[in-house]
Length: 67
Image (cartoon, rainbow, N blue to C red; front, side):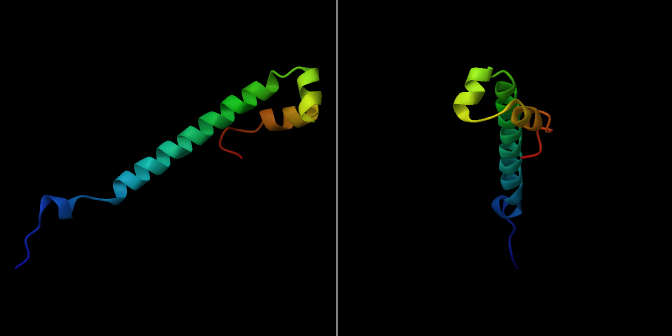
């Protein structure tokens, strides 16, 4: 006869799903923040990093879930 312990009944996959969900939310937040910063760069800043306004518009208009 086997004995079930509390430890053997715990869903060990749940913490992995939770961690992946938090990581996804963190990435989405970073993308949104980075795109907001890009949209605020001056023409001089854009020139310094080698980007054009069209590059910024393209990137800034993406939804946060798209890389």
